[in-house]
Image (cartoon, each protein chain N blue to C red):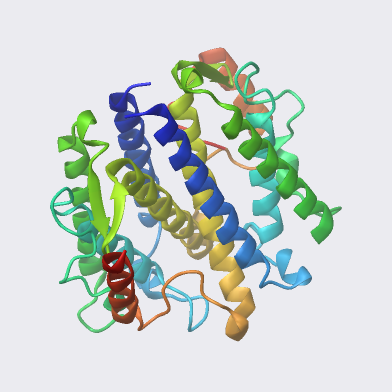
Length: 178
Length: 184
């Protein structure tokens, strides 16, 4: 297997995750970004701020510095009292940019290196898989909340209910014609 | 980088994901498996059926047959009838994961470049594996979220509890363990 293939797979998956989250968040009103299901539950704003904080910490000097930066204040990622939709969005976009720039600058040889996270040595592929799974789980939560809050206005990001068969047929046709 | 390392990391992450979902599910009352936030949203039972159905379809004979099996009824994964019980949805969930983890156990590093099809669309095994990882993680995130909401005050955290990040970091620096925490 070529390291280039591996890098391409990661970039594809991370792009898909960001696109899913962005399309979900776009369907939610500003107030609903901060709504919570119960006192302990995370709002969409909290989830976005937490992902952004984690991602920033991991991807600043990804190969050379510990992924848990001394200036990261994880607990503050769960507090959004002073945040606005714009301030959240700004952190979110800046962190994704760090991730994509970082991934794109990795060379095949870099995949043989290790990084530190909280002092723990992690081979680069392991560190990236962990992130992929971590962000994917929070993106799933963002989608769940966005759909719930959008209600009737919701436009699905996947195959609509009751239309799996049509979708299968259309896809099979598309890929056999090629 | 070796394919065997990638395979090992993927297996490790997937097992951890399953364990976290199971720990979350164990905190949910049987009737809460069928609760919905609103009529259009998915209950835990539907998510379990859907992930189970997806994994079973994708990872049965996965090198040799299309990942969308003819006998898969995806729409049925999102509807619940009298036949759906806590036991039956748990069974669907377990079967799907069993299928995935067995296939990954048998998969050899040199097979990562092979081509598999999903609804006729060609993927490398590596791509299909990534797709499964993010799709499953998406839904496991939802399972944890709903389980926590339904469990309420009884909930026991699966990650670093709020307000304890600093404490955690110091403890980890002392012990240099951390295997029990996936990410944060």
